Image 1: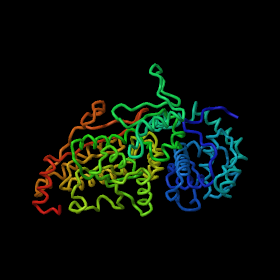
Image 2: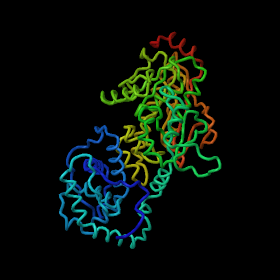
Image 3: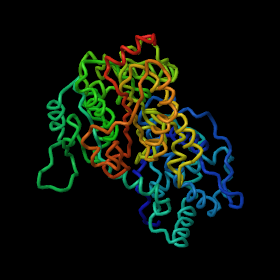
Image 4: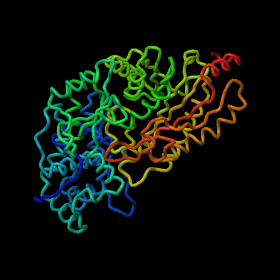
Length: 502
């Protein structure tokens, strides 16, 4: 049996049968269709519907997305080996099982043609077992075909088949540190550090240049945040401090908008803040934790169903966030004259975006902050221009809507995108379209871009913004600020004078 490095992807190990089914359903929805002049596998509709979004178990979701993503990235290779080995003629599986076959073949390949015993979690699924048995019986021929293709195409490692953008992203993801902020509502920095050290973590030796092993350090410019080597990801995910909400694992890039708001409101005696797309709720919670006074109220919007709203409220309760209020409402449906918004001064606008700055989309998918369709873009050579255009149009409309709230002083705009169309150009387009309207509207004042107050902005691609590409240190991100000129008292007075419902 040939020996080679498969990929930089983490080993999948033993995969529950239900994960195979979920992953094959995602694969069927997103696989890349080959040109008509190329031989391809005929895929039928897999059994069952796309149900992974209704699965609450985090590990099942993570394994499913990881497997589907890997199969999509290596689709061409997996299909070539299956076709050229003659697998289909010697194992006449129905067309509706072929998505499952490709997904299961990746697991076999990832495990170097060794199929571990079935995971104890979950039932045996007959269709999965049938596909696994067929692959197992054909593994010698599959392995030989793979070896022949590698020699023919001079493939040293399988990841060398990937486009540069995918390979670079995977390389960054492999070394990306783990970041976590201390939830000072439930604990304090010293208690969290003590808990980590009791579990074997320690501050690194000042003379040791390598940042590896069970170590931690405090993050420069972010006083509540700890950073760990990426190898500790699984250990930290299951750590009691994380499970009880004292330490919140979140990428460094997501701290940028929270610290921006803290800086902007440092002299403010109290106001309301909206987080338009709450997702997991961690960003909204971080904002309030940094403000840390009951005079501030944070509204977390964007839950699409009662179940999502209930889950989000449970997360807030578990984290002790009594001043973060979950609203099952779409931001675009909230009117600027809504009486609940009379003390609103900051809108944290974090809309749906390409997330093209992410090194790995897994966490966004697991926590419901991205649609599964993102895997098609992440496994492609370039992002779909049509998809990008739709996102930008929605983003500009959201910014314009935010500009219509009469008491709002700051709009903090945050994306995980590296495309300027979604970032500074979206802000510019919204101002270009909305400021003339504002000029003609009694009681409203214009917005203009404000330079970031964060020291880290000085090291970004444009010091006016917080703007970083993806790297081995963090995910790419963009934070821009629109500021309405005029102090808060003036804004309230103008709103009341012109009867804007405040």
